[in-house]
Length: 615
Ligand SMILES: [Fe+2]
Image (cartoon, rainbow, N blue to C red; front, side, top):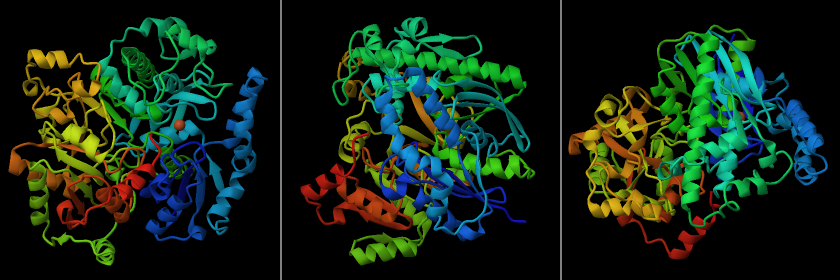
């Protein structure tokens, strides 16, 4: 009998919905893509609508709706934490209460209301870390694997070690709030002036500029790290249990002053702190992974939870050889919990058989909406937009690759939208990785940001070892490895001097390899491998680019400006195209050239940029 299961994650950050029918992932999407509010935490009404539409089912036809954590247990944590610190946490407690009383404690009512009152079936609640574990193990290529989940916090758990076998997951060991690797990393994200739950990626990107000189301070004062990877945090330095900030004045004193103000200059202290917390994180992940290996005896590891997005740590973990194989799910954060929860019901609770065939079942993470050429042309015609339609794919790809070769910046909108935080070739901005100007062009003229981070490369899967110190696929851009030695450049005296410039943008612009736009200052790159089965036309575009240039690597960055959720619809893509200095927009088989579009006036452009809050 056909089983239709809707998974939901909501009310923390990155709300999402996922639909699983007979064990197959039919659809998954984050609410932010529809509402255009980054990290939208509201009930994912639009994402639910989309999933049902994609599955061609009505709410009445759903067999189960599953929520990705247990709200009463979470509430229990909130109350207990408040009581432990009372009365000092009163203000943050009072701020959290309205949403709990109005919505979170009445989830069945809220869920039924949001699905038009038409769903009468059961509502299931999975444990937060079970959802994370399910989101990586069930779609993985492995019949059996160790599972490691690490995040800020779920109900009480902040990290778990589990074992997946066939259609079952068992959690064997856990670490509990307030002791949390995710919150420790977020505390440093906050202290270095980035936004918690979104700026962690920037902190990771900042680490190669610094020296890990604070590791001793961290391990002697902030964290008691045990041999098995568990940790006890010294809460005298943190205020996330009772305050409105992550760290307190003792933390300031330890690191020589208050937190860096957002958007102010980044100093050597922030770089060294970034390098230090990155080194500590890697050590914790390695120790936890060793413990997971000991407890399970497995050769395979599945990773999920927000910390699994730390692709530098993931690369180190892979190279440490603790496991032969590592699978990291692309929607590792809480959005992926929706998908994990639905799979958990299908396999664990309904005991359906699970077959593995050597590959993962995430379909390249292309689980979101797709728009046909008819829909796109009808929109462009209605708006009177000038475009060129190419019925022949080879001709289309020839034109796009040619534009890239000429250092044009291309908006690439093709197929289904990605699920998870990364653009993987469905909603991407792409360009020539060999170009020396591409990094600053894309940052300043397209993304409207000044970044110290290079862009991520896409590489033809069969060519990965030619360009990088990596011998396997990385289809979800979750592994960092070094650019091969033979591609690196010898630096001139001036360049060596520039590498010490306090302005990090000058450092990142030094040409360090023959692929300057994607090589970080420590010679590393955040790699996505592209293959025909997962990526289809995107793969064929890269093949054509290689045919024209001899290069199997391109730049890939998400299709958005700073603070904007990745584009979802052709309308979103067109708006972003005209508001930026992007040269070319490819919407399925249509190509739009900026030179043929009417000039956008400065005030329209500004109002578009101002729509999105800085992230
Ligand atoms: Fe989580």
